[in-house]
Image (cartoon, rainbow, N blue to C red; front, side, top):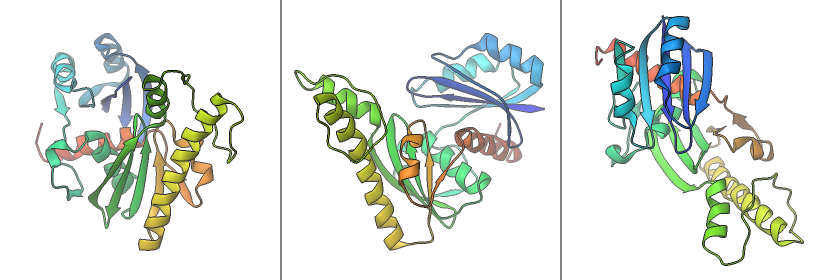
Length: 245
């Protein structure tokens, strides 16, 4: 039997079918597609599912899935997870941040880390001795480009590129390198601070924009794109073992 993982992000709804740690299938679309799930259920004998959403649509997706799958877990910030969480406002903690931390600890076996997750926002989260301690949230790359365009009268909308350490000699280059190098220097500042404080912490990079920066940070670990899926899968199996669904 396999598990269905649904991760509804700000722009795309990603789904995966997992058997233990192996991703058997993955895809993404702007919206959740129940018809596709029905096909996958027959193909992979899916009997359990977990749904996470940063759009707030998880419960609606769960309702649809329950017509196809017997056990469906709506994952929220208050769902039981296999790691300890020390966060003063747990109810506002993003489920995606929890899932990635679970993936780092339970799947990668790393208990002391700075996790840099580069999606719509950039999150910098700390795990110490397998405990999620919290972190910071910053503007993502695309959001920075959009802000420069939307909140000025004349600056064009630019796209991500490689940070190359130079100063632009055109407005487009100035924006591109201003954003990309600004993000790079921000990351380097966090890494330097963490390395000075505790050199034993691993630096984990994940998320869609991570590839542009990971080679510029020494000794960083580029986590597989399936890290969110494996974290959610671990959470699903943990709740099944606790008879929570």
